[in-house]
Amino acid sequence: MPASRTSAHRLLVALIALAVAAPASAIPAFARKYGTSCLTCHTVYPKLTPFGEAFRRNGYRFPGVDGDYVKQETVALGQEANKKTFPKTAWPATLPISAPISIGANGQSFWYPDKNTSVSRNNAGTHLNLDDLVKEGHLWTGASLDDSFTLWAEVTLASDGVSVEHAQLLVGDLLGPKHAVNLVVGRGFPTVTSFGAHSSYLGDSLLTVAPVTSIYGLSGDPFSLVDNYDGFELNGVLAGSFDWSAGVTAGKNSFSGGTHFNAENAYAHAGYKLGGMRLDGEGSQGPKDSMKPWAEDAVTVDLFAFHSREYFDDPGAPGTPTGDTALTLGGAVRGQFGSTELDVGVYTQRHDRATATLDKVTADVEYAELSQVLFPWMVPAVRVERIGLRPTGGTNVSDVHVMPGIAFLVRPNVKAVLVANLEFANGFPVGSSGLASWDGGNADWGNLVATPKDPTAAASTKLKEFESVALFLAWAM
Image (cartoon, rainbow, N blue to C red; front, side, top):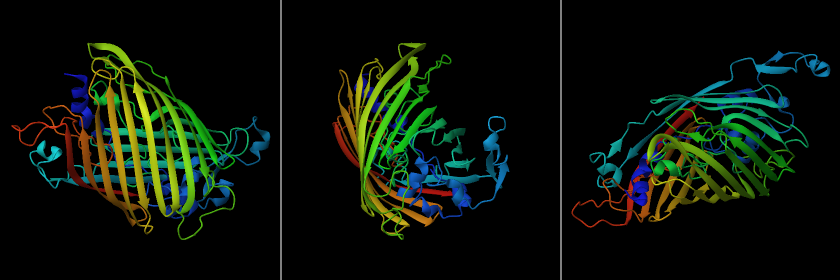
């Protein structure tokens, strides 16, 4: 099968596996710790306010002296005087008097208005899908041991098993000015922009992901920019306006013949914010309107680079390891004008061995999301995403996904998102499966093989569809 057709045929399967509802970045356990509302840090969670972003950057600790804001009783692990006798005594710490645990769940349902669209045709003309109304359960824990150390973890329970999605130790203020150099150790998302990975109202991640080696059928666990990786990261904020990060991760390995060690992934990011609250939340400047903590006038610019390496079976010799090396270069801009926000991003990803014939592929990705906080509990938004694939010696293909929708807070810790999915595809060869499908609004592309509704009709390389209306539900407590 030609490389371009293989990529088209595999795209739905590859990306549906990545479409999960966004986990919370700051959890109810933190609200209990500080005796404050979830709306201190969030709008429609997991979307963060400027203060919430500063809290996240500070290792899930308040700006200033974190201990001054703690309302929950704690148990002392050693005496404060032990700091003066260190290293002859252990450095003291604290634990919350109750277990710092939060629980939550999320799910989704889809309505396909036209049974002749791609997904509906491939599922016997289904109009309504409730199979994932309850999709995942979550167990979160987060606790600060002192003003520098924080523990943070997330366990997800789903029909395919239990996974530890996050488990991190965050250490603040290693050296230099406050917030300048911090350390993160464990499993989590690489920091490639100034904002939380899940700061989209309508999609799973702010950055649209392109798992190229899965699209071409090489890897069942592909590299993407937004995923959980084991590794080390240094990051920090300088002068309140400049933030940076650099790290190494274990990468991805779906080689079936056994362990093949991989620690060849490295990334770096730099961002600059003009206006609004400081990136570290320090100082006296808060929101312009205390009734609108999400609102500010600011522009933030980010640049990032990611060198990745992943291993999988050689398609011509199963059981023999081979791999793909990719270089990602990109940037993003967030403009906030009161309660209106516009996020725009673009990156290019060059793979050296990503097709069934181990040829080069370039993926071009763009996204934009415009949102308006009408009320603290209602945010209309529209998101546009595009992925283009350019394989060496193959046909270029692209797919555009348009998502108008509204995010609601039923209560501060209960959310619902209603979103429509429209799709415009170009350049896809004839095949046996349907056109790309973006069900779920989280980069759920379909099999990028355009087939006519009438098998006797001529196939088209262009197709547009009103794919679905999706409802997402989630709660945390």
